Image: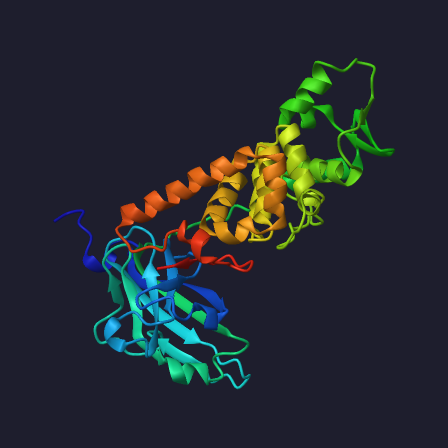
Length: 402
């Protein structure tokens, strides 16, 4: 036919490709159990849980049964399991559970799905609460005479690999967009002081800044600079902040990040002054005063990482003072779960004296925790029972659960 190209003359069309890729998203968690001998005798089927950790979009936890999971074993074995702790259906995963040899010889006890043939494929967890592990993980008498137990302490490493699949369709072209550098540019503006039109005097130390930048970031600055400041007034005296706190606040306003010198709240504190005198806590109070909500949350996040039995009452008192709702909620929940030990801390007495209403909030939180446990249908060790049996977490973040 006229005008028809022979096959060898047809223009070439680039073929398209795609790949169906199945892989694992891996994550690890280290679980340390201190005071092993004190955990024994809690009863068959009762366990100690690690903190929750996230892998592959799901939350996980390690459950350790000091007296075993099954009654037929008659407490002869300890049991260890990895549990799916968040909602999920048919979650497929690989697991590696390692009990660390503490003698330095690295003769660890390892159970692993990784790097081996899987005849039935990855393990499938059907729903929240499903577990993988070993009812007879280790005979108790052998464990207690082994190098895995040292200074009454056990150490576990857990690796979870969640199986995910996706179709990979390569793009012919791509343009990589770098991360935003606006904070770096504004930071250089602050450091150079170019174009600054206001100066702050903080305990004799001078800080040059830009009214428009401050007003855009803080409603308190906007009110002070444009509603309550004379046009010819170029210097403002600040009496409610220390120079280092004001400097850290300016750093955030211009760079949208915490300065490197912001310190952490001590993990153990014996008085309110220890918590409130840290730079992070002072910066939290400044953020509250100047309406810097993102800075507040960043400080709350920093502080809550080191909450423990010895510090939680002090941190709760400070969070209430600074209207730090997220940090306060974390403290209330932690205190409710470790109430007996918290009540014996020095900070609890200070809290009762300065903020007596927080006791009532603790009781409401305890009642809420009890309701949550009951609604799950699990056998759970009552937080109220802590008050009668003298449970003490000894400053640790992990609470005993059954």
